[in-house]
Image (cartoon, rainbow, N blue to C red; front, side, top):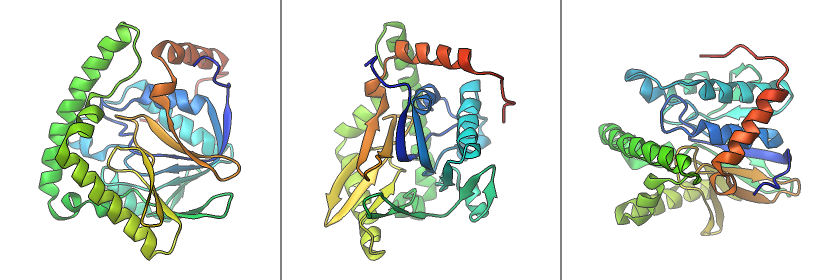
Length: 275
């Protein structure tokens, strides 16, 4: 899809579950998306940095620094950036209400679209029974999940060499496992129920790494996905229309490489990195 415009303007952009600091993070794809968009509001809907990996050592290449720099640059340019921490970056919740570098940290947010609809914006881990009541199971599952992501990384290195685009083995397996589908359905219903209790039109969340937009009992449930498996973002157009962009389906690795080279050529000066 080489005819993508140099930059598409959105009223609002929602991204979550980037998991900076892990090998599974698809930072190159996220950077490519950010090169091709401008927005008035940016919501970081949790698990942007993976604090759980601090205990076992981070994987922090230059591309992860670049993602942080891109976000801070947007804030400096006047974009309203709201950071809603998740369970992997839950230490940031101690700073709710604090502003740093133009970024506002909040436990959750209420977003009103251009057409007047109101949406609760929340990461979603508080509606995950495993995270709330059996943390050790969550950590054990996280270890197994990371092993699967490591295999996914190896597979996509091979696909890249062969000229194929990004494809998520973990997302494919998740879509085929019956218990995973049951968990996702319970999670979606629980989050939608909270939106009804707060008397809003819908809810925007992350956490389970499955992009989705559907109506549940009169409430619009939207999950903006992740940048580990699906590589998706939720965008709001100028008229209030909401759309899930599946960036990995729109861009090949060769297109991303060309865009990165142009970006590096046009960059006037290098900003200091943040580790």
